[in-house]
Image (tube, rainbow, N blue to C red; front, side, top):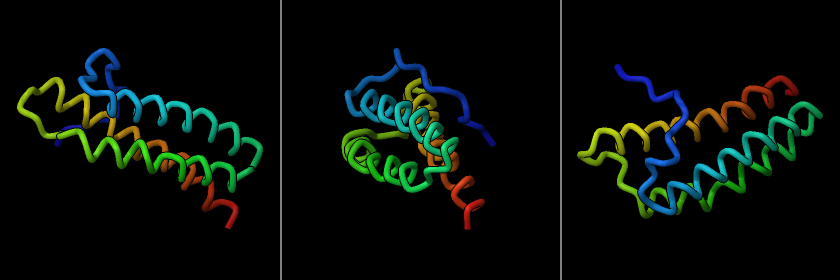
Length: 97
């Protein structure tokens, strides 16, 4: 069982959709962390909703399971960042309820 929890290597991105998703995830992760600190869970959820387009564009253009190991692992790390970003908000959102 392999873990892909590390940060993806930006210099290994081959496609604009990878870069765009990474930049969007980084921005939302940081901005939603600030919203959570202020207990503004609606803002944090709204930020997550804004990830739909970059995620859709990524899956529409990027094949994750490519033969090149380094590229595949980097893309899997990027997918792991999606989960980490959503979990950051979802875990705290449950506290309010």
